[in-house]
Amino acid sequence: MIYLVEDDDSIRKLVVYTLESQGFKAKGFERPSEFWEAMQKEMPSLVLLDIMLPEEDGLSILRSLRSASATKKLPVIMLTAKNTEYDRVIGLDFGADDFISKPFGMMELVARVRAVLRRAEPSQCSCTEYVAGPLYVCPEKHIVKVDGKEVSLTYKEFEMLCLLLENRGIVLTRDVIMDKVWGSEFARENRTVDVHIRSLRSKLGEAGSLIETVRGLGYKIGG
Image 1 (cartoon, rainbow, N blue to C red):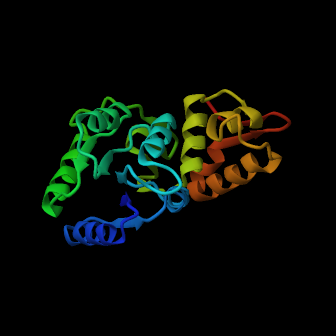
Image 2: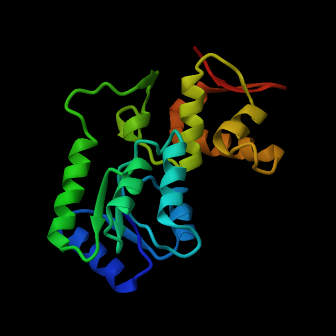
């Protein structure tokens, strides 16, 4: 799945149509809020991100993606009407994988998308991988499998699972999980972590039992 955040309706529709005609699955979003809502439901394999947007500019979105463990390696191609060297350098310094200036040809865009996706799949895997019983997780590739079958998690569920696996055998309190996954500025709600743990266990099926509740403390995945 490829996500496109672009407030120009005609460009958005044309890019989505072109990507789908080339065999990709794609969704377009006019506003960043729609994009973030979709990220809670499904993690894309690549994001096409305009810089000049309502609500929140593309560089701010990119900064947020790169600061979260679940999306820090998510391929991002920036789209912008600006064509100065400064804008290009800033975009790449913020962690963009590529930078395309408008106007651009659709076939050039498709070629860039394929190139970035190829680079995101290294021939020799040096990425971190976690295996616990039937559960397999590769944070860098955003892959979660149970008994070899891929499992779709929301953005927060994926971050939470990675956090538990990174600290395997260690009990993480609800406050620690809140700080790491939602940020210290997020308003405290006692049930937030519990609700997400319940949903995560359900989606993981038989592997959900790997997440242990330590009464009075928090949660852990056994060592």
